[in-house]
Image (cartoon, rainbow, N blue to C red; front, side):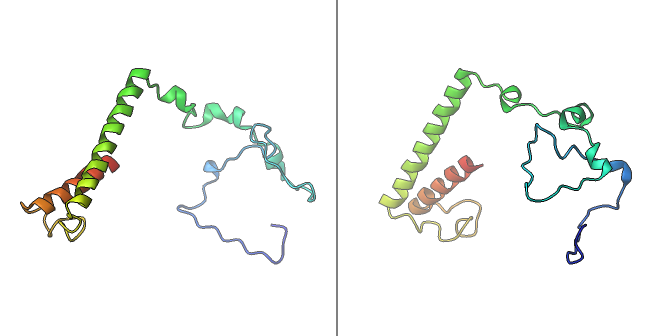
Length: 141
């Protein structure tokens, strides 16, 4: 810290362990941090000699792969998901229209349950309202 005026507080979840300390080069060209030109950069010897991310990669506990390499979707799979999404969303819109057109908006007066129960009572308005809720909730998951 180079200031007499600043206080720095760190919140940690464990005690300091020097074996877990690490870092990468502040001037790593792959990271390309744009440091301010006006200030003189004062870096410690440890920071100046830190490895680049490319040098660290073999020691990291995870390997970063592009999303395309991790998730391969065939055109047929994509088409099936798109059709299922279209059908589900169309059904949600249609049941929402049914709620509006039948005046069933208060068929279940409380949320998320209907009249305090897990299932609605056997009345037309409650079934229409709860059906729209259940379908929308299922698709939201």
